[in-house]
Image 1 (tube, one colour):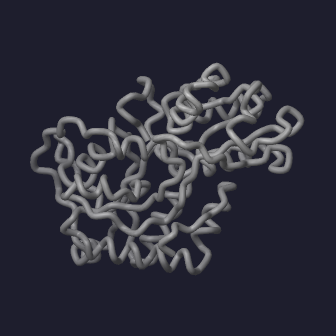
Image 2 (tube, helix red, strand yellow; image 1 turned 90 degrees about the horizontal axis):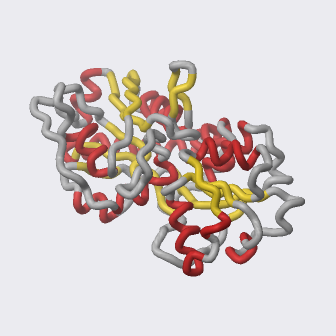
Length: 300
């Protein structure tokens, strides 16, 4: 996600890592937009034959454009949901704003100055009660993915990584102003700040780790697992672990979808589709396509 305190860079949504911070950020001024085509309840969506879904760009392994084509877990999930509902998919890749509140406003209920059609559904939204409470114009679907902060470490350089103290003496590749970065900056009163090597985005941090420039990589478990798969790195030689760290930064959150509040029947239909895809093992298979292990949210 893109918190208000991020460094100015385009890495637009590295949302799987930063959406939690953006969800908790104070929303900025509303974008002025009049005449946007409204988001639609289920009967209108069905009548149109098309489901409009908004996904973040540059948000691997969940959604990104590669060679002019969208790919990722959320992309495949959107296709599967549309298929379950018997609808065509109208996919739009969007940039992330300064906070999730603004993204929801722009893509689901208020729109842009040009009056572009609003999405019916937006995925990769933190399933967060505070976010839902302060955004009365939207309604959250059930969650579909359990996201965790994690670390990968290279055996032979790091003996073990079970506690935060094991980081001492090793360089850590991390995306600047991400949730992982804030977690490590605040750990034990800033003891590990000198160990952090900051990068503009997670992809650059992962490349540095894979090149052997650092012994440890910090990020989301999904992002790390996908990067290891894409880089051909051995899981046995590069274990992925989670470390309990007390502090203000949450190390786990659930991802779901959002619709306009007067489209709750659509949210329920999407929820039924997600439940079916989970029960069938299809959502797990989608994640495994990108090297990502699937952990069902606690609601299942």
